[in-house]
Image 1 (spheres, rainbow, N blue to C red):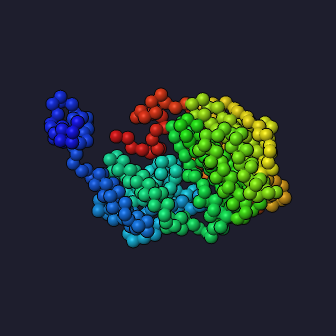
Image 2 (cartoon, helix red, strand yellow):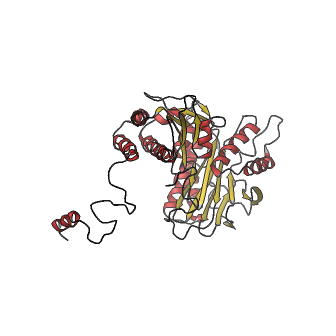
Image 3 (cartoon, rainbow, N blue to C red):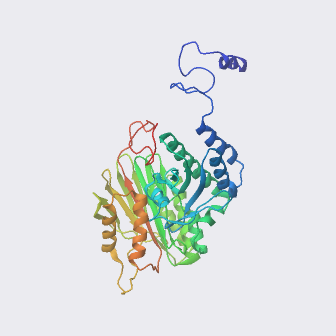
Length: 442
């Protein structure tokens, strides 16, 4: 078809009566192409944000919301300790620091669902979770004279767009990271946080959440993951020592792990590559590691444990067993033969990977925190019915509190939940778990 012929087809009215024929986009439901209020708000924000400096993203959101009748806009970002929501500063923005565990903004953050507050003048204050995919970015708050389901749906979509803008522009600014900080961060911790993937990942088939402690001083602990096709790759590392050297070792390990992963190496080859590169780059040093793969179609989990405590299998909201087996030598000694293990998960099962800093921390009385206390915390939090993201956040804080808010070693947690095999049509509308909690469906 020539260009002229294509132009004639574009201009020619449909002749079959199909609702999808005509000029440009068309809707079988009969909606027009005229700009709606929602398209005006989201479209204007998106159009203007493309070239907007990161420091003006917050004020831009406040300006666009004000143009649509909203006021008192606040953009809250979670701090690195996951304890406080800190307001983004800037012209047109309001808000003060709010505790995640005891505030309306915190409720929206913890539940990944909107929270509403009736004001004295009859207006409604909305607190909306800002989710980048499923990763918790923070909370958008704004006040409107009145709300209905149409307003709620638009407000949630606005919060999602704001989250995406913040995450995208975070790649070339320190504005948002600085707003999140409640304490000075060590160089080693900064190195680790720059390396981390999103702390939360959720799909209809599998969910994952991780945490690092102490957030502002962590050195050698880190974790990594990737979801490729129907395989979830997971890894947890604990490099020997503390500070910058340990963080540098961990960085090299993650790079070697990602190199093996993207090269489609099997687990033994990935272990060998990490073992060789650490032995040659840091002679006499070592790191413990646990690397694994979950087949999200079958629920089969395969792993190599190189010196970590065994992962815990959580079924029916309680710990049912350790995932044990012969332990492989830590990486860095060279020439070890890795032991590969596997287990069949059931839909709804969770697996908690963790480093020894979680259980070996010494309490005030000199005793270790211990695995029994860890199991009790897991059982107690699982009984509340929280998803992996909130479970890990609460568990991380409970562990720190149980240790008297002190730690002498890094500690990392990584929880995976397998919901079951994927839907036959993964693009079908309305599949279970296909939308975030609180979504107002049209």
